[in-house]
Amino acid sequence: MTHPEAIDFLYGLRQFGAKLGLENVRRLAELAGAPHRNLRFIHVAGTNGKGSVCAMLEAIYRAQGLRTGMFTSPHLVSFGERIQVDRKPLSEESVARLVEEMRPWLATFPKEAHPTFFEVIAVMALRHFADARCDVVLWETGMGGRLDATNIVTPRVSVITNVDQDHQMWLGKDVAAIAGEKAGIVKPGVPVVTGVEQPEAFAVVEAAARKCGAPLIRVTETADAMRALGRLGLAGAHQWKNAALAVKVVEVLRGEWPVDAVLMAKALGEVSWPGRLQTVRLERGAEVLLDGAHNRGGFKVLCAHLDTLPAWRRPAWLVGFLEDKDRTGLWAGLQSRCSKLVIVPVQSVRTAPPGEVGSEAREALPGVPVSVHASVREAWSALREERRVVVAGSIYLVGEMMTYLGLSGTAAEPELNEWGPNRMNPVNPENR
Image (tube, rainbow, N blue to C red; front, side):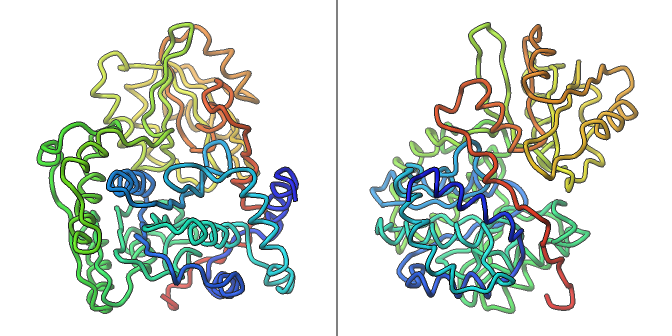
């Protein structure tokens, strides 16, 4: 199988949509030789910050000489970003080999119970990490946790970064319900590290830990205290909280994986996680700030970061959203921070109609020029005179802009971020 053939095969899995549940992925993993049984995981869930915490932990443990695996989603530009060993994305040759290995096992499933794209790539990741003999795997949930395909593993530590409103259609209408889904990754006796702040959400996590007899460590260190570590490679004050979570995980696991404090500080100072408060300067001198903010919590962090940058007091904004994102409350933060708003569709069958978004914006942002465009290319033409542009609203849009601006260096595969027909099973609270 060639790499293009493998990508086409993965793209074809969209027809099976996305669904919550563990039966299929468990069976598929067993057919693949149960590779997860020979791996050691740190399982990371949460509304925001999951990828950043994974990137920090990966950098720390790689600095100690451990072989690291990291599974995250979605990818910015190319599929291989999702499955990395020692921070090297999965190669085209490995993508083709792993897909070819999966096909006979997938053929044993009836069509009505065929594994989804996310279930398939989770098992591909497990196979790759086992073949690479990774010492530690940073294992990020896709959505929720309790019924997420990643939840077939028993980790060394479970991490719940935070809880905010996102994916309410599937995870629940309030932070307590969403916390219940995130806390589904808690395992008997396995330590839990969390940065959850809201009392009602933390109470849910605490109850889940108590029920499982899992030691619970709540991280409350302030940014000022964490800065004693030195420089942090990721921008934004919120990243110090993520760093505090990573450091606490390291402390919990120091008996299994000792970490040198000097090497840890160096790793945190050099860690990279593209598309998150990432500023790039273009040849014409303009600056673009790329951030995957797509929910209330993400936009709050983005706006707080802009407030620390005097030169970015009122930049132009280029935004696009998926239709399942709640945009309520997002516009208020832009009123005093936006000189011009340009709206585009996201490269997704789930994109929010730009015209609808534009109507919302015009009503919410009186006095701010708002324009709607059919593509990034057309929108960028409207921004050619701007010196500073913020790109936000969807990690998919950030990836598209990175490709358009020539920042990625690899072939774009945005279609592999798609779920396809919506077969996502809503959460039944009575089954929690």
